[in-house]
Length: 486
Ligand code: HEM
Image (cartoon, rainbow, N blue to C red; front, side):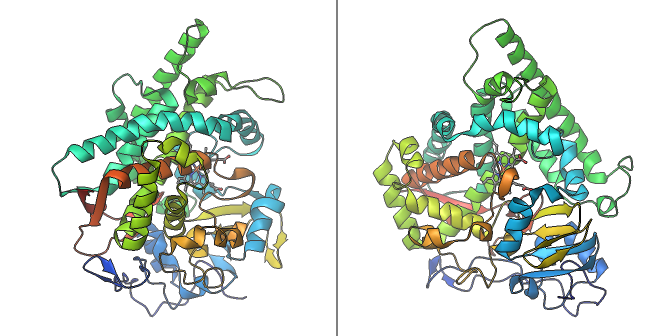
């Protein structure tokens, strides 16, 4: 294929991508499966300037129709030679079978590293392998049950607060979910004990994501790290604040444990006590802190966005909403056990999985090829940027039936078993797969069941929400919804 994946010298004949209207919805009642909003792909490739502007404004708008129909595209682009992959066999080769030949690319590391330091997400090589070995036992299925218990109190607190508010109130569900998932992390990570207040910490984090989450043109052009980036300058006070706070939390917990006093059974204590199974070494205080910041950075907005989109989708699919409500009613207060059981909240889980298909919080995965390679017949030159975008793969014409429609039943048994491993990548795949996958799924299922058991949400915006990719895929300007008691 001669055409490349990301840019072209040919000027596009097309204006900025239009926003697809929600045609199938009349007065909140859908006629058939709901078609949620998505940017209209371009017919022609973007030229370099258009691509640069689109990447800065909303990277979801760079894709053109061919990306949703072709298995791979390749050629020179803004970032050197680019290879776009949508073929599950080629993706498997890069992420799993020949993973040693691919590293996280410099652009991704430059965008993520200033906030996430040397945590697991941005570490490479031996440093990553060692950290993953030490941290992996914290996220086993057995620990998921203990963590799920700890999630229940903050979830119940938020639901209780909503139930007590005046009936029919409107609110920004995106903001609400961000606070909720932050509280769940604060509880499970460090038992919600932060000097200076968890709320100020959460606000600093939100500011960081707002200012930091855009791709800076200086990063695209590989400008030296010492050249100041506007977004980073704006985010710096927030980054400094939460790094300082985490340092203090780690130091006081380490001191407590060194004195032999009983420490809370949370992830922070587990991180401090964790040892490398190969040589018995542990993490330094700085590494513990970097991983706490990474867990919050990687696990808070991502989960919040899945829940926000899930509530939006449910509001447009009354039949599905009723099925989810019935599951929540049956689970009652036993939501922890129900969430850990594969069957009892099957439709709730399917809605979460379908929300992640349509709006994957991590919309693009990228890797840099170390040596020349071939992935399921696709030549990959040394140094090429390999682009694997879950957003496109999840809506690909060759991989999904009616990809643009909200149809959560595709994630119910037996259909679920027919989904190819590398056609559905909300958590990535291979050795660098999301370590918090089970944590996030359990949390999202528990939150959705707890909310739908007591409340109903209706979309209250005057036009459909616009999906926008910052670091995560979120609705631009928030998600206004009307909340009523059931
Ligand atoms: C719905 C929620 C979440 C989504 C969609 C998500 C998605 C992802 C994806 C796609 C990756 C792989 C990135 C790549 O290969 O380039 C990843 C890695 C990671 N995630 Fe998540 N994540 C979520 C929740 C969480 C949570 C709750 C935590 C921690 C508590 C977490 C911690 C991490 C870490 C530490 C990594 C790096 C793993 C490594 O490189 O070894 N994530 N996540």
